[in-house]
Amino acid sequence: MDVCATIRTDQEIRVTLVFEHVDQDLKNYLEKAQPQGFLPAGSRCDLMKQLLSGLSFLHANRIVHLKLADFGLARIYSCHMALTPVVVTLWYRAPEVLLLSTYATPVDIWSTGCIFAEMFRRKPLFCGDSEMSQLGKIFDFIGLPPEDEWPTAVTVPRCTFASPSPRPVGDYVPEMDPQGAALLREMLTFNPLRRISAQKALEHPYFTEMV
Image (cartoon, rainbow, N blue to C red; front, side):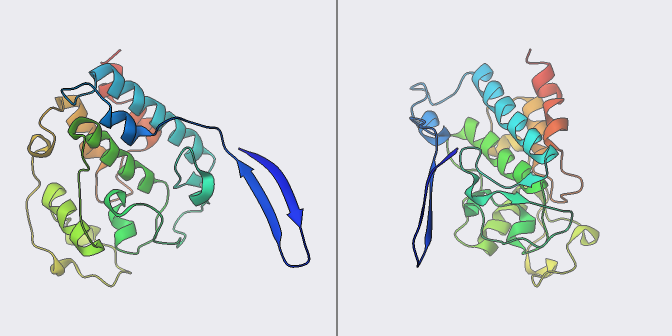
């Protein structure tokens, strides 16, 4: 990213940002995948490794929540800061964002887990049409969190939701191998303090055994 020009008038200051050109995003890439609709295992692994490596670097520098090609939503954070809630497409929001709780770097891991599953499914994992609907779909998959993990400073009580048991990853992503399913579970953990970090994810057997 470069600052191309700064124009100052009596009324306003204009800053022009110039980004590198990329001919497609991951969504387009998945749509153009092989006719069968599946990416080769090596391609999925490589894409995830690139994404997690980028997140690991950003998180190490205390930058949270951005598209890797667009720094418009980037945040410099300290633990337990209250940040703006509407910062990512609904289907990829972490539970703590949906519940309007405090959040930090683990929100990026949740979003990355949703993308990981989408690489297999070629469609989003959780497709809610509101925050409550999205939470319901999430809990249908991961199960309702225990009472002691429910955030205290939120307006939505735990009893609002049914109490489903966790569903097998194979019910949602049948093509995913066991190591991938294990990694996905760690990325889609309700408690952000227990959610795997980007660096730890890179050390997961899903990557080490793929080599």
